[in-house]
Image (cartoon, rainbow, N blue to C red):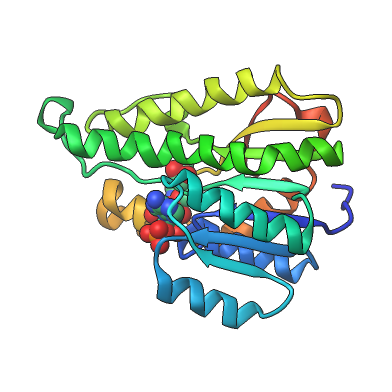
Length: 230
Ligand SMILES: NC(=O)c1ccc[n+]([C@@H]2O[C@H](COP(=O)([O-])OP(=O)(O)OC[C@H]3O[C@@H](n4cnc5c(N)ncnc54)[C@H](OP(=O)(O)O)[C@@H]3O)[C@@H](O)[C@H]2O)c1
């Protein structure tokens, strides 16, 4: 794999799991990293661990105004991201669709789709001005296949594939939108749906060793593609 020069990466949902592992791995590769999640303490720890010039803020992706303000801080200080990684997501507690409350269903949609929309609204204009950048929307095997008891989550990840393809048809030359299936990794989310067997899979840190260089190498040639992590 040809390595690309380090740039600015912005990652949503970086308080734990894949988001945190990506933040640490990109910083190790020399990238300037910005990120957000809701949990104040975890964000403060990440900010302390990585220091300047990286920017981490406690932001809920479902809040459009908060995302706009976060994006302004990132763009004013680091410039438009070369890579925007829309990673933040929730999964429903395993249950048949008929037993899932409207509140839980709406919350999954708000984070997994609304959050991605807010992030794109906040960052894309500056990326267009810069005439470059890649938007990576985290999908899943469950964005391309299905399983029982995770219908709300599957719905959002199939929607991510469609949203990403439609977005790719709107982008100017030089930019790209990619749907990225990270594979199966032992995180809180996997524990929620797989239980103890999640322990059979790689840790986020192990996963990031191959996934982050693959993300770093995405470019305009990948616009509209559905990619699976190595
Ligand atoms: N792990 C897997 O095997 C797997 C497989 C396929 C796809 N994925 C996808 O990979 C991505 C990361 O998953 P993961 O396994 O790392 O999940 P995770 O361990 O549950 O982490 C999810 C992250 O999203 C953040 N988040 C949730 N709601 C948010 C909100 N409203 N605003 C801002 N941040 C929010 C969480 O932070 P706070 O709680 O602090 O806000 C956390 O940092 C997701 O898109 C997931 O669908 C994972």
